[in-house]
Length: 255
Ligand code: NDP
Image (spheres, protein in one colour):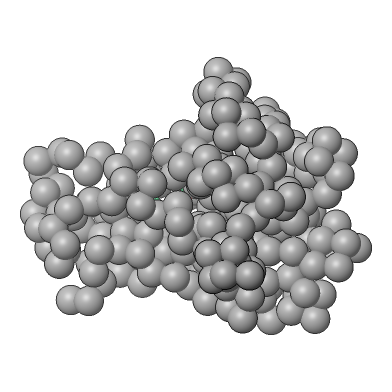
């Protein structure tokens, strides 16, 4: 076995939430290229179908579950459908997330709740639902998508709810890593900096100074640059890693 073999995911059964566009789509494709069967879950059926085609084109089993994972019943159904179709879930990538820019004093209650419901509570509900099956199967891997915003405060725009939700994701990662290590479940997170997706309008001139020029690499990332780190954390290449948060931010947070 060579070192590159330890990154292989042949036969692994993966679920990526929010896998139909942006970062989740890149993760789903990369995991399939590494050998995994990949299920994605999101709300938009047309985008879900496109993601299935992209995964299947890599020669792997592909599945899309239409689900709003802020709804508890959808989480239960999602996990049941993937488990039944694939026979189990070996790797969970908690990727679905939302960011809303607004000064704190202007954030309505329902908007705060919306961000926490998806970024934190849905991740919790999905993790606990999937972990039950992983424990019965003898182990598994969870990769959470956190953010550098868990440890820096973005500017010039304000997004306190997002930042707080991602800080919670990082510490939930450590908490579940400790609790589930005896069950052979590893739990890690990635913390990306600015990545070009629908969530992050990285090309807007008003953000250029603070988002782009303030970072040592002076550019944003593409989703495909972040995906190999998810393959790493999902695979035996990271077998001694749990409870870690992998920062991938072009150096943004060094200053
Ligand atoms: P996008 O907005 O491009 O994608 C979000 C994904 O989440 C879509 O697939 C969307 O599908 C899905 N989603 C949203 N709401 C729900 C829901 N209620 N139930 C199920 N799925 C849902 O965002 P990114 O790809 O940029 O972000 C992905 C993750 O990466 C997030 O957790 C984000 O916080 C994190 N991140 C992003 C950074 C960036 O710069 N882009 C930086 C750091 C972290 P649909 O709408 O069809 O449901």
